[in-house]
Length: 153
Image (cartoon, rainbow, N blue to C red; front, side, top):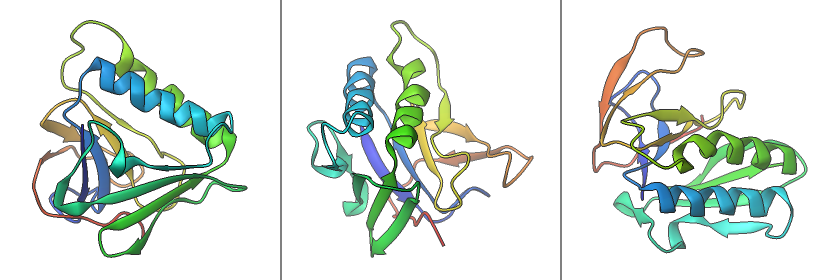
């Protein structure tokens, strides 16, 4: 799975995305989100997890918090996502379709429709149509790039 920050290339940028993964990797990711939701973990360095390739050194810390703060940039190429138990449970639920067996084709899922910060997307393809209704009604192609991007402003 690749972890990347995109600062341009789509009307939805800047954004952080996870992409290029298979079903077992999606299951591991969903399990990480559930471990934050149930409180068995309070902090996960996603970029240090087995099977995660941090593009351009993108680092994303996932934290259990008392409020849904979403993703914020803490330093160049370093981000932190802080959510409540309920927020992490919702993110885990949104990840579930990627955990199903069989070929589901190229799909994406915004993991943060209600956060007012850097968008966070999960995509199982290398070229995905990125669409975010809150930001744009148009659909733009956003090719994977090796340049870093920022999430919240």
